[in-house]
Image (cartoon, rainbow over all chains, first blue to last red; front, side):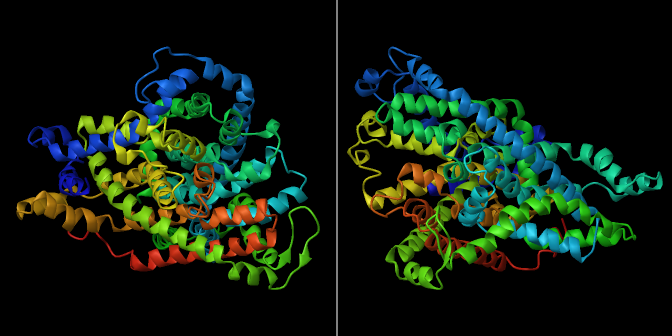
Length: 296
Length: 307
C-alpha cells in the first residue's frame, strides 16, 4: 500500500499553476495516484458510512443484520431518543461556549497580532515569543492549576468556566496566523492612511481588519472547531447535566445507553451535524485559509 | 516555528520606525491578560502544586519533594512516558508520509482530486469523543467490521488485547489528525514556484526525481511546522484515548496526559498529578525545541534562489 503511494503521488506536484486546464490536457491521468487516493477515501468514509447506516437501525436489526448493509427497516427512533434526552440543551451549551470563547479570542488576538506586526521594540518581541511558547508547550499540563483557579473564582460547573480558558488557549495560534496575514498587507497602504491623519486604532479596524477578513473567518472557524470539540475542560470543570456540552454528552450517552449502539451512533451523527453544515457553507474559506495560515 | 515569525516581525518593524510605534504594545494587553491568567500563571502553578499535598477539595499543604519521590518511583510514570513516546513515534511515522503524499495529491488541480479532498477532510469535523465512539462500535468483535467481512484476522478483541489496543489508538489518532496535516502540506506544495519544476523538466528530471529533489526539500519548513504541531498535539490527545480505551486494558494505552488526569481526578492526588503536569510540559517543550533544532536554525536563507 505504502509503496504504491510513494511511487504514485509525485506526479501531482506538477499540478498547481494558473494554467492548470492547459497543463491537464497534456498530462496523462496518473492512475496509481488516483487509486491510492480512492483507497484513502475508503479508509476515511467507511467508518462514517457505518455510523450513519447503523444509526437508522433498530436494536434487533443491529444484532441480526450485516453491519455494512443499510437498515432493512430504517427507523428514526434512535434520533428521537437522543433528542428527548436533552440534546438541545447540550447543543445550546456548546453554541454558547463556542461563541463566547471564539469571538473575544479572535478580536483580542487580532489586536495583538496588529501590534506585533505594525509595532516594534523589545517589548513586542517578548510578547510574541511568549505566545509562541504557548504553541510549543502542551497547555493541557495546566489543568490542575486551572481547576484550582476556577473553583477559587466560584466558577466551577458553569459555562463561563469553559469560556475563559477557551479564550486563553485560542490566543497563541490565532496571533501567529493573523500576524502572518497582516505581514502581507503592503506597508504603503498604512503609510498613505497615516498621511491622511489616521490613528493606528482606526487603521487597525478600517484597513487591516477588512483586508484580512478571510484570515479572521478562518481562524474563527479553526478555534470554533477546537472549542466545540473540546472534551478535557468540560470533563474537569463542569459536573451537572445542566452545563454539559455536546462532546461530554456523547460520553454520558455511552454510559446511559450502554449496549444500544444505534442510539449512541445517532448521538454521534447529531453532534456532528452542526459542523457538517458549517463545512458545507464555508468549506472553501476554511480550507483555503488553513492552508495559507499554517503553510507560511 | 518561532524563528521566521520573529525575524519577519523585526524586519517589518524596522522598515517603518517612528516614535509612535512602541505605543502599540497596549493592544496586546487583552490577549496577554487572558493568556497569562489561564496559561502562564497555571504553568507556574503546576510547578508550585507539584510540591503540595492536595486532594482537590480540602486544604493545600506543603509536601516538599514527597510527590516527586512517589511519582518518580512509580513504575506507571515511566510506563506512561514510554507509551507516550511509542504513540508519538509510531503516529508520526504513519502520519508524516501519508500527510505528505496526500498533501501533494490534493494540491493537484484535477477535478476528481478536488472532490476527493472535500471528503478527505470530514474527520476534522468530528469531536474526539465522536471518533472514539465510532471506532468502539466499528471494532466490536461481534457487530462491527468483522461481522461484515468474513476474514478471520478481523475477528479480534481489538480493544481488549494490550498490543492491539495501542495499535488501534495510533490508527484512530492518525485517522483523525491526518486531514489537518494534509491541509498544511497541501498549502506548502502550492507555494512551491512552478518554475523550479519547469527547469527540472528541461534538465530531464522525471516526476519521482522532481519529488525528491524539489518537493521534499521545498517542504522543509512545512514539515517542521506540521511535525511540531503533530508531536505537541499527540501530547494533548487525552480525550480520544480516554473515551476509546480509558487507558486500558491494564495500562497499555495510558499516555502521560491521561495518567495525569487519572492521578488527579480519579485518585484525588493533585500534587502527584502536578508532578506529571510538569513532566508533560517539559517533555513537550523539549520535543518542540528538538524539532526546531533538527530543522536547522537558518530559516532566513532563501529557498527560492534562482526560482
